[in-house]
Image (cartoon, rainbow, N blue to C red; front, side, top):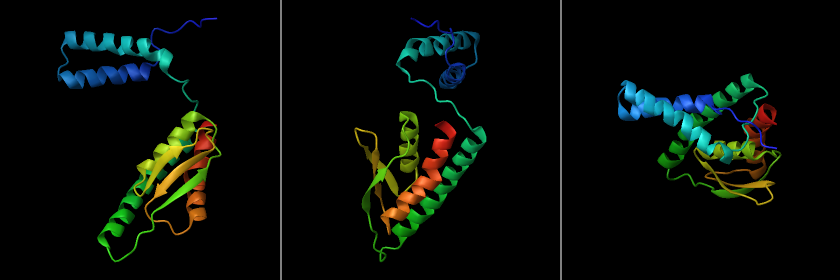
Length: 164
């Protein structure tokens, strides 16, 4: 059965599209607002069927804490990578790690992979086809198990609590 859909499937996206349109044309003339509004309604309607269902945030306060933790880790990792670069006598230990996933939802796996890649010194290189493990490259690894446990505790468990 075909579900009836709203004329505005994602109101926040529509508002964002309108704002971006007005910033691009650098004008708030009535014609630009009208055209931007029409595009802000038409684009989500035309593309809505290609989107996955939006995840439900179970714990918004934990999501905010997670975002702040990631921002702090990005700053810390930037300083650590800068220290590695500025100390050429210190030998780096780059390594690939196979990270076993507890997450099952595609959205949360993607969010974890992006979080890992955003943190300097680590990059998500590949997701296995079965979705059970993630290949991660780290710039300087002393202990594989310690890195896996750090990622699990700092990123994966909170994401599982927030979305799954």
